[in-house]
Image (cartoon, rainbow, N blue to C red):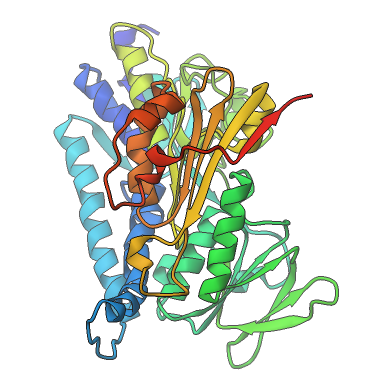
Length: 459
């Protein structure tokens, strides 16, 4: 089929961060672009993820801020909190952002379709019963929460529904130990809910640096969050009064809650797209297998973002989407060049990281040096039980290049964003040491760590 006979040069399925960026960049290159979205524009991040979650995190911080204020001489009267007001404000902001995404797509010249899309063949998208041909098709349908098949799972919430709770529960069980679980544990706790976290593993935040995992675990417990490690929920029962009974494995018994949130992972959203019929290869985790340019096993079909089961971060999806558009319609093929990816966990206290963890560095380098400090920051000076901060640098012993920077503490994500530039550029420990500190700050510890705490070397 000649190019002139296609309806579109690029048809994007999915209106989240990666799909929207790809569509707008492709349109800016002069391509004729269409995009199909079945719900609202903005994807997981805007609608059910990063943005609403961060708004709730901000809300949850005020209880501790008010307590801190008393130590600085403020007489703080008894405060009250309205879950309904918070959710209404969140909904208004999400609606505004989603509308902005749609407006920007239309301004870019992208043709929009509302409805679920599927592939009829390698160049045809079917939506609302109508067929549309495209030279290239980009799948950017993101991911969806995974819920286990246990008795009573229909009574539990996923990370989708939790944003729409009609009222704040007095007692909540959060099942899981990943970033979504610990973030919502902090949110609910900060808003006054009694929180229990049940995780079947030996420590929360599997895949993160072990020191960070232990530190956040200890801080969460010190705040009053009950963390049950090595614990598995086998069933959920609903009493006649609406209270939920979670039954744990072994002799751990049962416990009553007003809500149960499952945060046990997400899976690539590939159902109903017709990929198997076209021979599009999938990864073992269910994501679409793509090469360094985002191309699947079918030459005309590309994929970006969480649906590829790679790095599930919004900025990564955005970078991948732009790279695909530049590859297809720009002057030269472009790889996303994802390296030294910084990330954050908006737990309480929050985590910011860039580069390798200690175990990852040990697996790749002959010898590494560890610089680590733990302290109570000045903001917590008037509270004996105040939140403690952890800062850690991982350095290649041979080249002295900083391989990883890690922090648990207030403003960690904001601080790590700047350090990510240095780590990506290959800064050495000497570069960090030569940088003057801003005093008094917690961030200055990154440039004042002089004594290494540990050196690891392979035998």
